[in-house]
Image 1 (cartoon, rainbow, N blue to C red):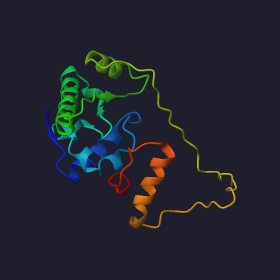
Image 2 (image 1 turned 180 degrees about the horizontal axis):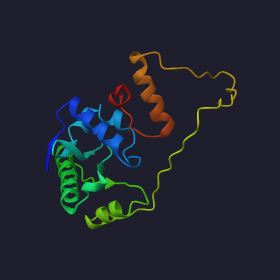
Image 3 (image 1 turned 45 degrees about the vertical axis):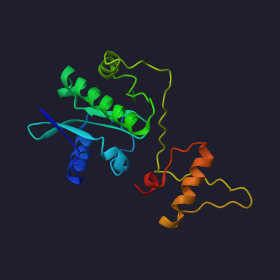
Length: 184
């Protein structure tokens, strides 16, 4: 087994192919978008065995350790390496920003191995949960009238991205969305 930093688009495609082979849905949401963001690409590491990707990990811009390990290759060694990688990324980020941020992680609530792995590494379980909603698009979505004076339209191009980011920040009361993320 060996590991290396993301080397470019070919490695990003290897990660996409790896995720497609997983026996269950990945915990890493919006992977394609994430792999286009330079700061995330800089923290992305792949683990391979006989040229096959068996795991990957990155630390996103919100200090979350995002990773997947193929079930047949789950072991203490790879788990320790992934956590160590995440810790080193956060330490580097803290040195660069002068902040003292912690590393977070998440997983499915029914993944006992991953929960145990994270707790053994010192992560503490939180009551916070993320809900994922889905709706079939095989039937039409009911039309809901817009309030008078409002309209819904697509963004017309890159020249509107700064306005879109401003709208997002105002709507959600956060500064997390950036122009780079919207362009990804």
